[in-house]
Image (cartoon, rainbow, N blue to C red; front, side):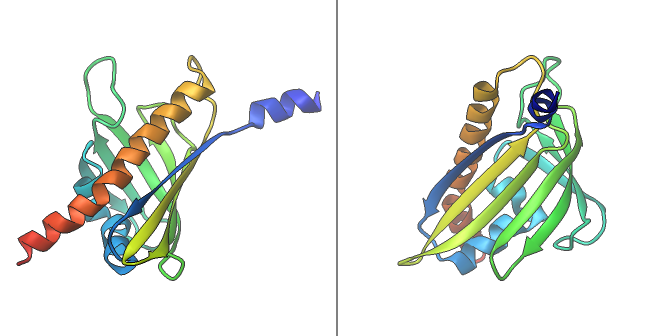
Length: 166
C-alpha cells in the first residue's frame, strides 16, 4: 500500500544548465523580470501580470505563446505563481498553477552562479507531476530541450538590448 502511494506521489524531475558569456549582474535583470521573458524565451509571445507585485512571492503572471504545441493550433498558456525570489543568491522558483498544457503543479527553479571571467552558469531545474498519456523520458527530454534553448538565447538577448540602448 505504501509503495503504491509513493508511486502516485512521485514527481518527474529534470535539469539543464549552460554557460552564458556575460557577467552575472547583466544576466540577472534579464532572466528575473517578467517583462523581459520574451527576449530569451522566443516561444513566449506575451506575459501578463495578474496579481501581486513582480519579484515578491505570491506574484501571479500569465505566460502565453507556442511553448507546447496544441492539437487545435491554439496558443499555450500557463498561469504561474512566484514561490520565491532571492536576488542575493540569484535564484527564483515559479509553480505552474493552471494551464492548457497539462503541467499544473509543476515547479521550475532558475539559479545563476558566477562562473568567473565575465561568464554565468545558468541552472534550470524542474519537477512535474506525471503526465497521463506520455512517458517520463519523453516529457523530461522535451522540457530539457525547451529550457536549454532558452538558456542559449540569454546572451543574444543581452547583446540585442545593449544595441537598442546605444
